[in-house]
Image (cartoon, rainbow, N blue to C red; front, side):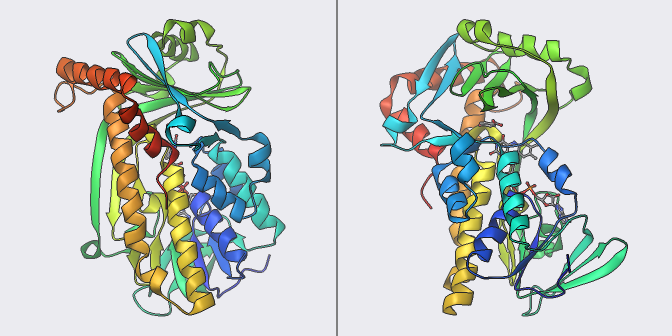
Amino acid sequence: MVIPSHTQVAIIGAGPSGLLLGSLLAREGIDAVILEQRTPDYVLGRIRAGVLEQTTVELLERAGVADRLHREGLPHEGFDLCFGGARHRIDLKRLTRGKQVVVYGQTEVTRDLMDHRQGLGLPTVYEAEQVSLHGFDGTKPVVRYMHQGQPRELSCDFIAGCDGFHGASRASVPASALTQHERVYPFGWLGVLSRTPPVAHELIYSNHERGFALCSMRSHNLSRYYVQCSLQDQVEQWSDEAFWDELRVRLDPAAAQALVTGPSIEKSIAPLRSFVTEPMRFGRLFLAGDAAHIVPPTGAKGLNLAASDVHYLSSALIEHYRQGSDHGIEHYSARCLARVWKASRFSWWFTSLMHRFPQSELSGGAMGYRLQQAELEYLAQSEAAQTVMAENYVGLPF
Ligand code: FAS
Ligand code: PHB
């Protein structure tokens, strides 16, 4: 592949944000080069999100990469809340007048986007090292990087920082130009992937006095489970047997009985944080996805927020190149943040409702647990409360 030295849009990062942006721009004939620090296999090896909002599915359809998603994705019309030893279904489809979510792993979304980009022969530079961003406060930004031991330079009109929470893009912005809001949660999620049939046909979110648990899936024979764990825990100290025992304890008796266990094919601990950067645009540099914000995974919003940022950014860039208007560019940050903050609120609320907090925290200890039980009992009885939950879970409109 001949690596271009100039393009219209330089995209940093070949995760879902960068790949989806590249696909949407390519459909409008707008050139982009993606620079990714890792190998394709490394990117695909990260086990992350599992639930797609309807708007994310529609974006993937628009990008021309939704065929396998429609063949293999699992439409879900509801999920269960488990507390007090019983399960209560939240009927998403009825409460939102027909909306639903689709269970389809982020790994598969990324694979579909990678295959699509490769099929079109579009340039992606993997193992691009020491990426640095320059001149985005002017009109001729440049990205410099090392590839196969050689220094490279990519001049462009715009830079899309799609390089995640630890990427180079947000770090390239002077600290005085941005505000970072952060809340770190005092626990993590221990996740296991196993080639076993899911314990139920829909997701189960459990609030137990020993901690949160989640039963999810990737297909009819690939299950994804999580239990809340201490931030001091090391994944090595959790045997598969210990994980399955802890998960069973945190579920209702019927689910505990039905649980099919097996060897973990992936096991990892993820910390939880809420993080938002304001603004999300700096001259000709746009931040999108985890580069700009992180939500605790409870509400299944991370990947979906990345998709909505890409919706606004692709629309703004297409408007610039096709109509000569910068209205979308000027309003990019405000449009993204209006939706980011609402999803952050929902993810914080759902995390606060479902997890055990230490005594030292406002929602912690015995009092915090009793307040959580009261809110869950109210949710189980109130159609109004369930509707609020359902509207946020399926995703608020763009
Ligand atoms: P990503 O982090 O996915 O991609 C960024 C890409 O940029 C990576 O490929 C990285 O290698 C590359 N990069 C980084 N620095 C670079 C540099 N300097 N130069 C070039 N490339 C660089 N969301 C959910 O909805 N549900 C979940 O259950 C869930 N679980 C998660 C578990 C974990 C451990 C993590 C970290 C996140 C989880 N998320 C979850 C959120 C996750 O799905 C993100 O929202 C999603 O990956 C966002 O996609 P991107 O913005 O593309 O960022
Ligand atoms: C997942 O399947 O990984 C998943 C599903 C729903 C969530 C979080 C993670 O809220």
